[in-house]
Length: 185
Image 1 (cartoon, rainbow, N blue to C red):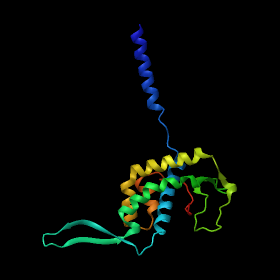
Image 2: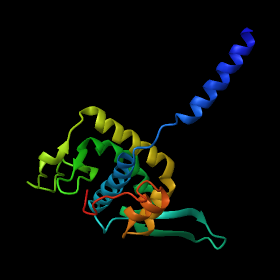
Image 3: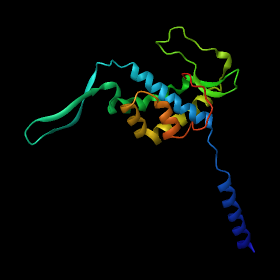
Image 4: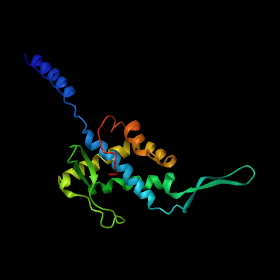
């Protein structure tokens, strides 16, 4: 009789574990994706556009010449990879924002950057969850960067327009069908 009870318990547990999968928080994932694009765009804009980097194989051709080319540093794969390593560190500057008119929730940057002298947002519409909120956003940011690192680098290396739409709606599907304000984060 004991083996029969154990088998029923195992079947019940397997059914329950399949149906209790966690549902992704659309607001959190979409906001993290949009914040990644915003932070990378800002970091790229801070780099001198005149700076270049040599890329290529540094191998000699059969005729003895060297084939390498210069590309702008800001959108080079090496620089983008370095920027991606630190992009999630700024997620503590974001908090949940609820639009007072539309009641749309999204994480927005509340901390001004060094170049935004005196440009403070209205803190009345932000909901500060303490370190838990920014830790969740940072965790989601890190998982998005880990999963889509190659796609992010290729999008930023090639394109300058509509990266947020392509990455967050088409590539990752985190913002597909979500209602968010289109203004800057």
